[in-house]
Image (cartoon, chains in turn purple, blue):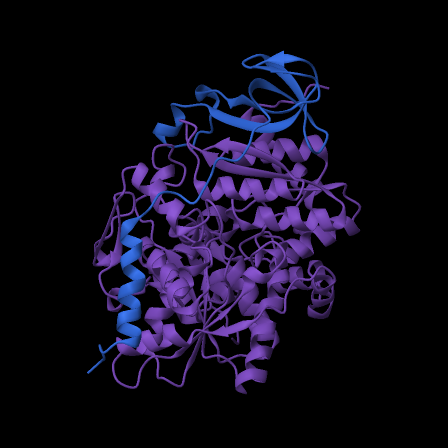
Length: 479
Length: 102
C-alpha cells in the first residue's frame, strides 16, 4: 500500500487522521451550516469541574497561590489620577509541575489519551504546552512527541523555543524541530499517522475545560481572601484557550460581574510564516500574530472545531508592546522579588495600565505566570533581538515598530494598554463564518449561534449581515 | 568525527523541497526547504555528514544526515543588556522615593 506522502496528499487525509487521533466525532455537534452546538460539545466531550479538579489534584496541578503585588500597585498609584490605581494581583501558575498554567490543559488531554488506550501523545507547540504535555506523559507513562517550529533557514533558533525543547527532553519526550512554515501541520499529521498516538491538541474540549479549574479557583480564592470576586481578570491571549477556559471557570463559580480582558503583544506588520521575519520578534506566543487570526477564525486550529472561542467571553481586548512587557518583567523582579518568564507578563503589563483607570478599591488579577530560565528570560531574548538587528532603547513604547526596535518606557507612566476595536474583530469573525461555509441565507439557529459566539446582540449581528448583503430569516428569535 | 552504533546523535533532513512547499507560504519562505532536526540512538557506525538511520526516544526509525554526536544545549542567559540595569533603579526611586502624583 503506497500512501501519497506529498503535502497535498497528506492534507487530503487530514480529517481521517484527526478523527483517529482525537477520538471525537465532531460531526455530532454540527448543524451543517454556520452553527454548531458548542455547549453540547463541552458537556459531552469535556469533564465536569469535579472530575477535572480530581484529575489535576492527582498530578499536583492547581491550587496555585494568589499574590498581591503591593509595590507595583503603589507604583501604579504614583502615576494614576487621584483615587485611581486598583490593587494588582497575580495567580502564580509558574508553581504548576511544568512551570505554567498549560499543565492544566495537558493534564486533561493526557489523562483522556491514557483512558482511551493510546500508547503515546503528540502535540504541535513551541511553547509551554509542549513541556506540559511531556511532563504529564512522563507521569502517566505514555510516550510523547513534541513538534516545534524552531529555526529559520540559517539554522538560527529562538532561545525561548530551544529552552522549551530542553525541557521536553528532560521529561523524556522526543522533540522534532522544524524550520519556519505552516507545513508543521503536515509533519504533525504524518507523525500521527505513523505512530497512531493521540493528538494532544490545545483546542479539544477537554484541553480547554482543563483551564476552567483556574477561573473557578481564582473566584474561590478571592472570596476567601477578600470576601468578593475580582473586578477584572486579564488573560494573555493567543489561540484563545486561556481566556476561554478561565472565563468559563469564572462563570461556573458564579462570578458573573467579573470583566474578562484579553491582552496580546503587538507584533503588527510581522508575518508569522515568513522565514526572514521569524527571528525579528521577541515573543513566540501571546502575540497578535496568533491572537487576531484565532479570534477572527478560531476553527483554524488542528481540530475541526476549536473549544477555545475567545470572542464568546471577552469584554475587552488590548495590545501591549514588546518593550513594555520586558520592562514590567524587570519591574516584577525588582519591586516584587518575583522572577517570572516574559511571555506570561503580557497581561501584567496590560493590567498595570488598566489598573490606573480603576478606583483604588477595585481588584485586577493577572491569571497566570510562567517559569523563567536560560533562553527563556529577558536577557537572552534581548541579546537575541540585538543580534538580529533590533534596536533597543528607552523612549515612548507607542513609537515601537515590531521587527525594527524594542522601546522600553522612559517612565512607567508611558505604559499604555491600547484597545483593539472588538466590534471590528467580531465583524471579521462573522464574515469568516459566511465565507467558510458559503451560506447565503442565515438561519435562525445560525443567527443565535453568531450572537453567542461574538457575545453581541441580535441587532449587532443583523447589522453586520446587512453590511455583507447576506439574507437572514426575519422571525422573532426571542433572545 | 565518528559515531559508534548506539551513540546519541542529532540528524537533519529535508522534509519538503522549495518546490514542494504549501501554496499559502510567503515568498521568502517558498525559496527555502522545510528542514527537520531530530535526535536518537544511531543504528550503525558512521561519520558526520553520512546518511544514517536512528531510533528516537519513542522508538521511531528516522533517516537523515548525521550532524552531531552527543549534542548538548548551548542556550544561556545572553549577554549584558546595560539598559536593563537602569530600570530597577528608576522604579525603586519612583516607588519608594519622593515622586508623587498631583
